[in-house]
Length: 153
Image (tube, rainbow, N blue to C red):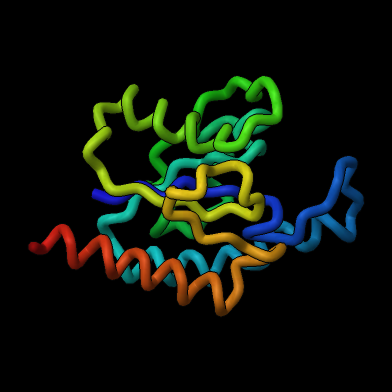
C-alpha cells in the first residue's frame, strides 16, 4: 500500500488567497483529471487529504470532488488541527501522525504539494508550481514506479 498526502490549492487548481470570487471558484479542481489518470494506473495508492480544505469540509464532501471511481480511495484527512508555528515540515509531521494513528508506519508514502516548507528535505514530495501539470505528473509516475518496484522485490 502507498499513501498519497494531497494538497489542493496550488496543486489541483491555482492558488488564490481568500476570499474566493466566482472566477476563482470556476477554476476549482481543473487539474484533478490529470492526477486521477495517474491514480487509475496505480491502484495500490490511497489518498489522504492534507489540504487546508479538510478544516472546512467533511471527508464525504472532499471525496465528492473526485471522480466516482476514485472516491473510495480517498481514505481520510490528516489531523484537523491547524498547525501552530511556522516550522518547516508541519504537513510532514501531520502525515507521520496519520500513519501512526492508522497503523501504517511501514507503508510507503509521498506527497503532492505546492509549498516546499510543508515537508522536510528528505521527504518524497512532488512540488507543484501552481498546478499539477505535465512535469508534476511525470515526477509522480516516476516515484510511484520506484515504490512499486521496491514492493515487488
